[in-house]
Length: 205
Image 1 (cartoon, rainbow, N blue to C red):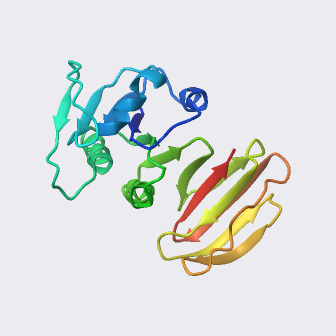
Image 2 (cartoon, rainbow, N blue to C red):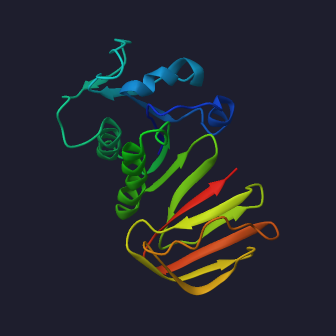
Image 3 (cartoon, rainbow, N blue to C red):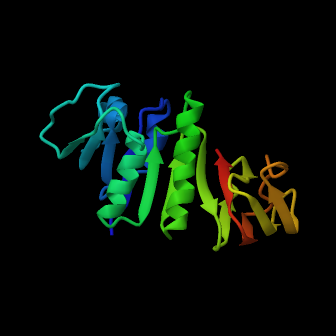
């Protein structure tokens, strides 16, 4: 199954890096003001969604879902749900982390939502890659300068970090005490595993 790439309206500065993360067979959904990235990304949209309160409907001859301005879901969350309905299991979100903290946190929460459905989701921006670590180990290559583990959903227990500057064995990380920030890979690859709960892994370029 193809991967679904969802493009939001947050700023992107390093287009070359973002483009290097795309695949030729990606199904790409542009969300409203995410259309400002269309020319720079040099990709063809498979679907456009939005209420078009922040960008004009381009009328490109591409399937377009026009949403009401007053709704529960943001354009990005609607795009995620629409792609789930269409059978996608693998997601990459770009242009979803930026100046609007409320939208940023909402978009990061989409990773939790996808994980709860057994689907894989990633967010990338100019500086980092993000994913949820839950019932499967995660690995960080030494090409990343730093990595951080943040709890955004309760308490994560029996957390183990191997091959890192700050290792951890059967630790616990809660939302109230975030001590898993700015770790470094020792050797080639660090490994993270969690027996209970979920953590947000941010790998910094």
